[in-house]
Amino acid sequence: MFYSRAKGQSTLEYVILLGFVVAALIAMGVYMKRGAQGRLRESTDQIGEQYDARNTTSEYTTVTHLKQTENVKKTGESTVEIESPSDNVQTKTGWEKVGKWDNP
Image (cartoon, rainbow, N blue to C red; front, side):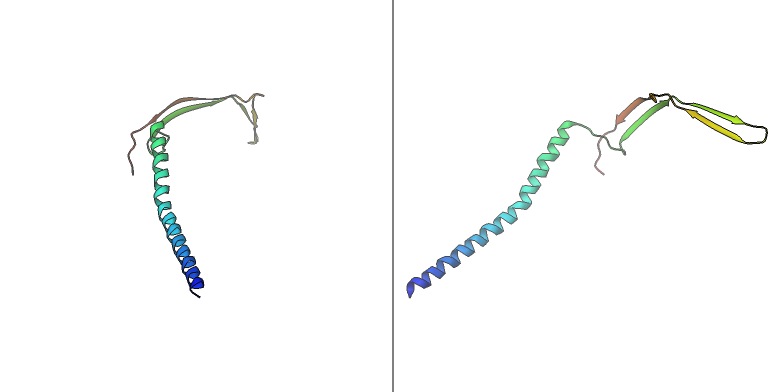
């Protein structure tokens, strides 16, 4: 009779202990996530300044080689012909400057 009572007591102790372990793991998950995010942020900060539209000044010139011919007749009709070279050349030149990082 005492044996079955001790068996139930030890099972209850294991369930309570397991509950504490699960609760501790759930509570630690928040801090582990914050730590991982902090390490990721530190790594990205070491890479250097990144593109940000609010802090970037840029000026580019794009050149596309096309030939456009517009034919206007006396009647007022017009036709437009656009010729593109077979390789469709397009070049982009310019500069870009990343400004100082300020957290908004």
